[in-house]
Length: 432
Image 1 (tube, rainbow, N blue to C red):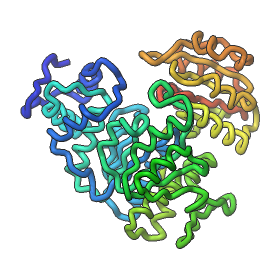
Image 2: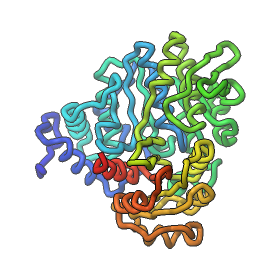
Image 3: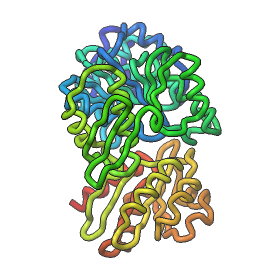
């Protein structure tokens, strides 16, 4: 890797994307550093303005990526030019920044990182902050009708909160990242509510949001648009569902994205787009709902006569959603789980939510500063995984063990983090 990245407007862009990513990982002593002062200072030097004619910011504990995908797909079906920024990625960093439905290429990202580097001078930025500024720089040059930005962590102090959204969305609030956001839903909700803007709409995608979120909307004079109060999502039959509010009724196909919770995510996306008050053809609502896809969310394939399902769910709320999906769609045989989790997650509560739906657990280790070995995970779980097989060093090993023991008609569920799913997808390529 090149040893020298000069801090000037003439930053060399000859370094590869992988070299830039290695470089920016080393530029801050912490992987997470909450606060907007540093990133705002660099944004001002970059001359960043609004990333698009209209902007929607999506925060929450779970469902953010799916909600972004629905908003993006519907808006593109309506003929809009759309940019979407999400995190983390599964297999390639390029997945984080999309323009017109396509991941941006290496050259564009390198140019954006070089621009950020030239502007930051001696200001230390985290990996996520670099990426957010790079995405906003690219969007600002793309002539977008709509930018859809996913919050990384929390909301109030997240780099994405630099942007004053025309509409904000808070999908759900549950227990996660307690070291940074607080120990209960009220404290976490207060952090999530930091993306709300005064006198602007905020879509609340769960029926019972924390009072801290509602209070912040009230204090700011924001128009809170609540699922179950201001808009409704109702299944019609196996093939369709209905979104409605006081003035509009939309009969729609079921999402390609699986799990009952995806109706709530699609519903929040529709509410957010309607809050922009820009006309969208009825056909675009249906086309977008059906077209939205997100890798790693209940993504299924077959290995011989065994179904393998991968899902990035990594907290108790996501585990409860997984359990509901397993119960609604039982396997012909038994269900085995390959589970690997980061050390800072409430893995015991995750396993407890799924224990009644899993016949055999295969625990795996994850590398990295936030990772943990399978033995450490097994110790943390205690007696909640009485039916666990021998711990495996890697997800690939655990998946191989699970498939070797599975019978025709069985299902293997691989979940626990983005890292877990990425490793599983790579391992499954050997079965192609």
